[in-house]
Length: 276
Image (cartoon, rainbow, N blue to C red; front, side, top):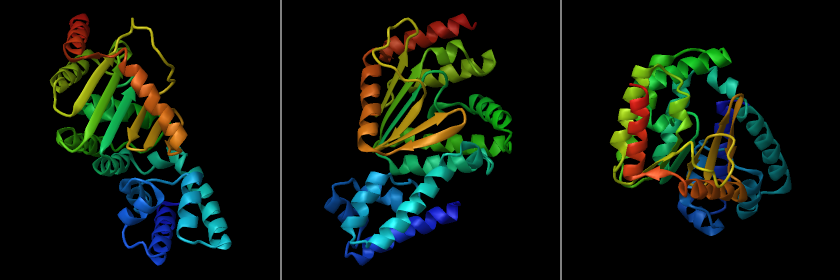
C-alpha cells in the first residue's frame, strides 16, 4: 500500500459519507459522536482509522457487507505499511516533518512526552540536526538533514497559536544523557528556559531523583484523540479510545511529579551549571 492507496481509501470513506446524506464532516461527526477534527483527519488521509472506527463509520453510512469486507482488508494493508518506520524514512525526514506539521495545525490539543530526548516541537536547529543525522545513520536512510531541520523549525509556529493547548514533558535524563555536544545542549536549554511562562504552553521537567507514579517505556505524542508512539524500528498510531485514555492517564500522573515554572527553571539552570 502506498500514499496513493491511503488517499483512495480515505476518498472512498468520504464518498460513502456524502452518499449517505451527510453533507459535511462536522455533521457526520455529530451524528456518530466524534469530534469533527477526527473525521477530517481520516478523510484527508492524515490518520489511519482503527478497526473500531471503521465499525462505527461503515454502518452509519449504510455500507453493504461486500464494501465493508473490502475496506476492512484495505485497512489491514494500510496499517502494515504505516508501521514500517524505515519505509517511511526512505522518503526522507523532511516529508515526515511536513506531515507532522499538518497534523499539529489540525489538532487543538498537543501533548509531547519524552524521557530521553528533547521533543521535536521545541528543538533548536542544532539539536534537531543531531537527531536527524543519528536517525539517518541508524536506519540507513536518505540524509536530507537541512530540509528536515527547516521543516521541524517551521512546525514550532504552533507554539504561539493561542487556539492550541500544548503540554511538553521532558525527562531530566534527556540532558544528563545528551545526544549532542555541550555547546549545542546549552543553546537547547536556553531555548527551553524561554518557554517557561509562555501562554497556553504547559512545560515541565521530570527530575531524575523523583519516584515515578507510573511506567512509560517510550516517548509519545498526543494530537487530540490520536497517540503517536515512536520506538526504534517503527512508529505506531493509536486511536482506540481506551488506549488513548491510558496515555492521557500516564500524562496526568507524570505531571504530578514534574517540575514546572520556577522549579523547572531552577532545574535547567542547575543542568547548565553542570555543563559549564
